[in-house]
Image (cartoon, rainbow over all chains, first blue to last red; front, top):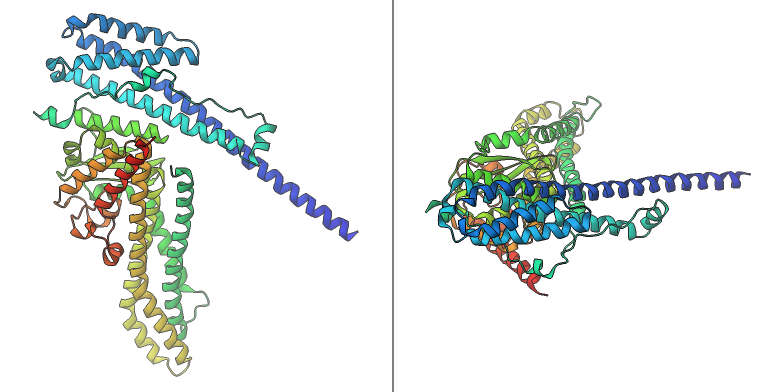
Length: 197
Length: 320
């Protein structure tokens, strides 16, 4: 009797520890999943910021950049279609197109010294280039955290928990367009050495 | 690529180890005092001095975690950032960008009115952190370099270095103070012991006294050396994880070059917070040297070595 009692106690202890372990790992996966969702939302927040800034910038440079109406028009169009995009894949494409028209605008603005001296334009350029960085960093963070989430689901023995509770692998953000990869870094020239001179 | 998440975990467990070590030193100083008191015929039944030392260390650590950051910022005369100034606005943007890259909330930002370039981070963790840069840093660095420096500082926050350094500095300070008090009290205790020499074990008393004297002399030195070692090790780590955030180690390398080239000391930053800064604010030549002595007593590793490591990182990531 005593032996059976001992075995039973041992089983109960193992079961309790197993349950505690399962709860711990399950909660870990849930918290990672929430961070992934939050990381994705952060990208949206920054894209929204970009959409809001672009009309202001275009309005500010319009007067000076008379001869670039075509480019300005394209930026506005790309911006509007990005705002109207539906679905993740569609939005990614439209945002990439917008990034390209924007870098063209930045490159052209280099030819207008009066623009670079304009305080309002300078501020807007700084805000927009910061937003571009934020979008890039938000995507980088999303990929980091999504990779952690995916790895956590695949590792043994956590994969048992992941399968039991139907955790799904998430997709990483990738640059699909080869041209986008080749786009050089935007240099805005709002640097201390130039602003002082 | 080094695994940053493992490194962070190791940092957290190192923190516990270091704190355990410091607590042990506190106990040593306290027990020594208790032993001398006991041998001197004063036995209240509880290890009076040990408990006192532990309480003192705990309280100073608690205090520095819950308000030490404000004291540090005040001592550097830091003022809150003014977003209407274009340069400071840019700094705010850069901090926001790096906070997004690191997935932490944006820390409070302060400006130190000093023309020497330097920066430090303080606080108790990512949820409650502050970052301060000198005006000279804003003027001398371009946007990419600023990004490098901020990513280094935010890595200190993200890796829980700020918390570790705060607690380590507080405990080291507590040990220093207690040892100092003990040494002052030695004359008084010695007189008392002579009075009661006849009744209690003289041999044991002398042994305790020797141990105690050794511990109060050695403890502050050990505490100082360990806290400096912690600081130097964290600098390399923050350089590496900062570069991992921006994916641009060369910008931080060139920022460090500019900061190191400005050899004048940063007078606004006091001695006590040197270990928090991106570069030693005292402008000492010691930090540029390697060697047993320099390694033991400087808060930062040599700049040249840090720059070389960052360049190496850039070279490795450039290879296919």
